[in-house]
Length: 405
Ligand code: ARG
Image (cartoon, rainbow, N blue to C red; front, side):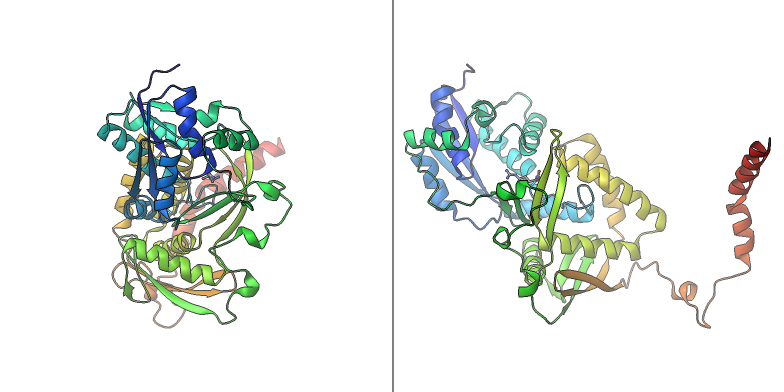
């Protein structure tokens, strides 16, 4: 048995993390469990969660308000990076884990704990994100992972908890496994495990069903400064406000639902339902303002690097040299990303209908126009095309020679 006197446990208030408290004490011989619950804007009441940890035997129960750093230091970089894992999932859960890990480590230092712990199972991505982040931030800190070792079924976990006064989840518990924060919700398990079963309406909370969404379209304007969204419809908002407002607008119109088969780090394909209305809307708008303000080659290189960035973040490598280096590249590109994007929200759609940058637009009307103001020198295209196509013509003629031999 590992000799641990004091441990800091990442705590959500759910059955698994609650059972971790007596389990760590009884089976791991830990003397003192300090719990840490993060407020990431999930809308849960944190005071009952704080009390619940004490009732389950925690010696101290801490709550940290992490909403601001979550949005400013994790969500906003993801918007600048157009971070979409496998082109579709905006990393709403993945982004929270390195931040929680960071605070677990801080609390462990503050309370001179000799280990941290989390309640992740052995088949998810979150364990990878926690373990790797903790290992990068505090290489010598032990990480205890009871739920990865205990081999108990859901029923057994609940029964174990009841022995230590942890109430079974109240009557009609959600049949789904849900993770949520201000960026969105991820929903798994239950009947969703059949990839062919459409998600029932009760899965969703942040987004309207199409038939419930307003019949009238709504046009909005999102403004960006240095790649960050700073205003909606001309109203300046701080990062947390802008995500909330984008959630409300997109959610109302039923935009932001995702139903995908996703490739987990541990090699499993899983069926995932997400609703991330605001984040998806802001990424979409951000991609659009970049098309106006970044040169073609920067845009193309960035899009290639973006998919790598999203993969790193998904796979738990937030604190890694490549991720940092990519941020450096993105940061330089974002200096030029200033302007406004006009979007029409309607019945599950967010349709881009306009974009403008008074300072950084690379769209040059005299080059683009087909009207009489056209200043493009058409005859010069001929010489350009002669040289541009030269390698192709040479290659094709060699191929013809080979085939005729
Ligand atoms: N598949 C998603 C991800 O890896 C969601 C994970 C949800 N986590 C949870 N503990 N329910 O980011």
